[in-house]
Length: 120
Image 1 (tube, rainbow, N blue to C red):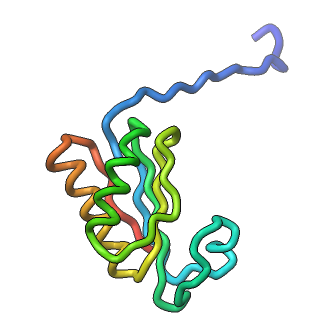
Image 2: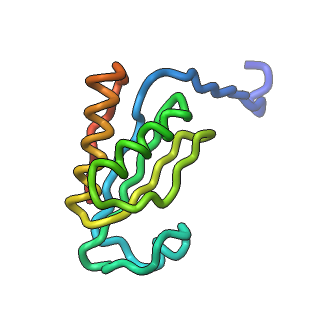
């Protein structure tokens, strides 16, 4: 190595595949999280949950939103067809059920590669 102070330049790209890369349920999140995300503040924080997902291609968030709100009593907090992010809120069991419905449909009917749903 002639010059040990040289910097390495790394270029990262994302290749649009058919996958759900992130699915997580936050049970009983602090009220400040709802406020900072601009979500519905009129919830019972003790039994509430926030579900968040990310998928590619990003337009899949539109389909996931439809499945989630039709699967149970959840509130659509955010859906972005440009980044593939989906956020839903509701009772813990309803949010878990909605994310499960989305993941199952995308895997079984659309042939997506899916991650497991995590919960904390």
